[in-house]
Length: 363
Image (cartoon, rainbow, N blue to C red; front, side):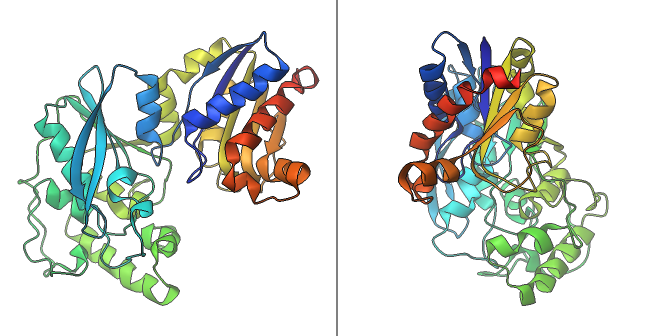
């Protein structure tokens, strides 16, 4: 049989490529004659660069030093694709894991913008931008300033959104879009403002306390009002602490993260020839159905048996032919569910082997 293995990364514990390889190793133990196609996935957040690098072996890693989310230098890289486009991942320049302490008021996306500028200066003909995993709620102010937006009235040491004035900001100084345009990958459809917006929903994970949500909401509202031609209610404007809005100001196009990545990586063509599909993510929960990798892969698989590997399962998995939880496997194997976090690939291999034994039951 032909089996396509297309998981997301297990955030903070294993890359998508490592997870796909471990599933394949376990599967091969149970069914050594099957043909396995590995398509490590991403949704625009952590792991997007690695997924593209795996899919395009001829792509070139370009090192760059940028301003991190708290202002410290960060050594990172962007990816130059063979067709001339560049892939830049916000999480690698302005992401939450780069902070040692949460900085809800000071964290910004300047480094992400600097990496974009570096790619443009290197001659990138188009940009693919992943914007998951942001450390900030700066409305994209940092990245826009790096791209040439004048924010001379922003106070030193505070939020860039506290720039004085309520007049529209002149955007003519922004860098022109590259010839092939700018595609932004995001699995978030939230608007910039309101109860489902950047401050209310995502602010707390970046250190915004309940009593400060209204302060950040007000900052974002005043910021949005300075760009009257850009609708803050557009789906995705609230992604990455409002970085989605900032990129809309620049003229970029927002696209569904996982589905767009799948198209670029050729997953639909791979699935078209598959007998079984295996996907996965670190935690499968109530948000997974909203454009996360497993739900996108499941939809693409249509009537083909699709199986799930997840670090934790906290939502119904009836739509899958079979599912395996690493915490359950770890509990059964070692008696310690926490082992699934400390040595995930060991249990991913076991999951792959167990799922391979379920094939005949699922067809």
